[in-house]
Length: 265
Image 1: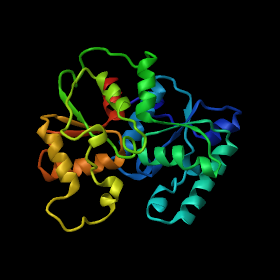
Image 2 (image 1 turned 45 degrees about the vertical axis):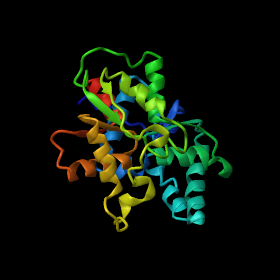
Image 3 (image 1 turned 120 degrees about the horizontal axis):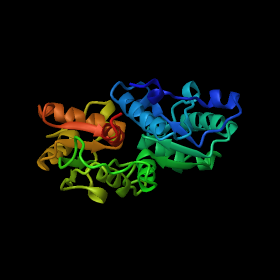
């Protein structure tokens, strides 16, 4: 792996040189600390570097968006965390943010403005779609995904909360694969449970865990790849595939990982 492919400049480094990046890549807690989700971060960084996108991260100056605190009802803690982040980003004059986490995306895009954080915020699926539309990522034909069945799971914070359903699917089209839909998709998509905090606790008593139900729907499509656009969804679906003992047959990838593989990164 080329060192240039994993080069990650920080805002502090660029500011010291008097430089301003085009975009801030907001990594998020999962992308920073979760072992599986770190591969999403690495894949997206490789894409950015290959296409010479002028970007930077906050590094140690990035803290939690406050989203978990807000969803848990602790508005005070949310505002403390949010204002801290906003002060840092405003001090750097940040205008445009891209993140691979729909939870961070929703919070910064929709809840930071009332606290003084006004930015253009894109989910990485939207940014990747822009790169495809600009011809920077091109259909090459062939590749390991050509003709394979891929099914896409809609993240609640991307779909239901922000009406982003097509961008991830447009990104997947570049793979020249066969995109097959689950019986519940887009506005009727079934939550994997992560957005309802099931990833962080034991499930309520019942007949079946929600991520197992969703994974069964994905398996029914016959797809060999389950594509996700959220690190938390990816964890829930990966656990579902393990539960069904299908790990050797079905892989769960983030769309950035799929594009990085397609680009040979």
